[in-house]
Amino acid sequence: NQYSLTENKIRYQIWDSSGNVGVSPEYIVKIEEPVDVTPPAAISNLTALVGDNEGEIKLKWTAPGDDGTRGKAEVYEIKFSQEKIDSISDFFLAQLFAIKTPQEPLNTEAITITGLEPGKVYYFSVATYDNRENMSDISNSACASVPSVPEITVDYPDSAGISLSGEVVVRWSYTDLN
Image (tube, rainbow, N blue to C red; front, top):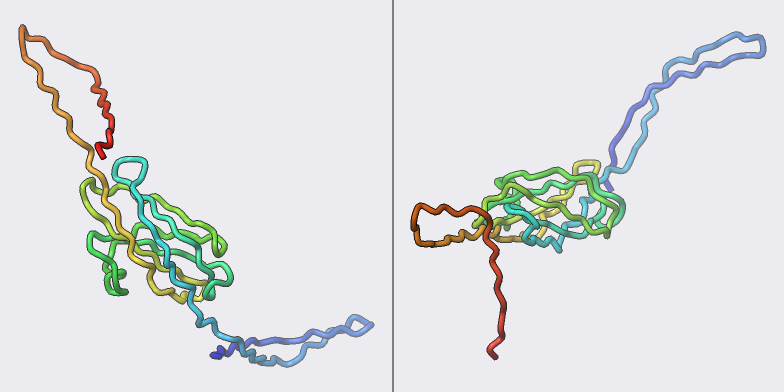
């Protein structure tokens, strides 16, 4: 184990039964404390799914602990890129989306990434930090494609200057031919 040394200066005040006060000389007390060098566990089950609204992707994963899988971690760093995030270098080059406070270990975490460009593929990764700034390994890289909004064109003959306005309702059905 590694230890850090903390120095504290203390003085004692002593009162006798008559109310007289005596002050001790200053003492230096040295305390050895174990240093936290255990990082949080890496997230291994990060998933990315299409969100409910245009330009959204939903991320889900299981919360790791502060020291491996024990204790509550301090913070998540959530990043994304249009390139795969396979290494710590890729992670540091990726764009920061959010800093999020973790839940207790083994709880399901979720966040919705917004403002993404339709028609593009995005890769996501998460790093977890503890209260001593120990960083986990980066999570698995999850990816999802932001769907494009389909364009619908309605052709109608332009006769007598008639203009149309309103909404278009699209209906379809699926038949399995097998």
